[in-house]
Image (cartoon, rainbow, N blue to C red):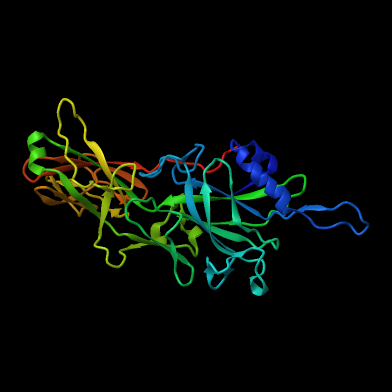
Length: 397
């Protein structure tokens, strides 16, 4: 999606002060004095229309002021979406789109020969307000050559393949991994010195992972004592994702991203188990010394949320309860160690008491309630919700 905004509209945004600097750059940097008329008249001021502004929106967003408010477990609640922006004008019918990062990067005006008027850069952007953000590492070519953009989060850690057609990231379970499929922008040739117009392509970031929250409680004081402190907990998961960015806009179907664009695997040496983290941080749960379970009492009536993890999604199969027995394999397995026991807990995600969750777990948030009982029993229940706490990276005016 591309929005077109003029200078007056930008000045109406709630974050107008942020744009005083940008507007100054427009007036000084891109409204160029191209020389005097032959007759010695006044200089002619022209707008080259080349400044790149982008906006961002996260999947399942609500119309809030910021693009990234409360959307990941360890978010500082500052509402800033720190993103890597790969920009490229390289496209051939035979090879498709590529997103190279030459040294030095091509910024739309520094190329020569066959690279003249080309853009090829791995840039960054911080979507921290409701207004479009200036991508100041490159400009649109005045030739009108379109520039293509993909967005990646987190901002660092991404690697491209040899042909620059995919982006790979190794995750540890603490970060939200998001991908914004390819969009297009180009030189705004409708700008005039009296009405400066910006094309504002909008990146839509899609969650690639599944968010698991874990709550724990012991059935009573005896169960708490029998299990002892929690000393370790991990979940089965891949830890690497490779995203096809060559033709990424083809992967949006019926308003949802088709996950065939993403391939999950294990990095070299990874054992297939992700650690869990304390809520609101990237500190591994439990801390040194272990976590002491609380038990149900008149003072403690609900389980405490103790950990989270962002793990690879799976396709959950439809299940039924037949003769009080569960059918099919679990979506995830928790590996739990305590002072006295070591257990593996299969997680079959239920919708209700008689049916199970079906479909992809991508962009879903599951709350797992673990009730530690006497014997060697942990009863698990799960609640599911869409990952819908995002926000818009621009203001609808």
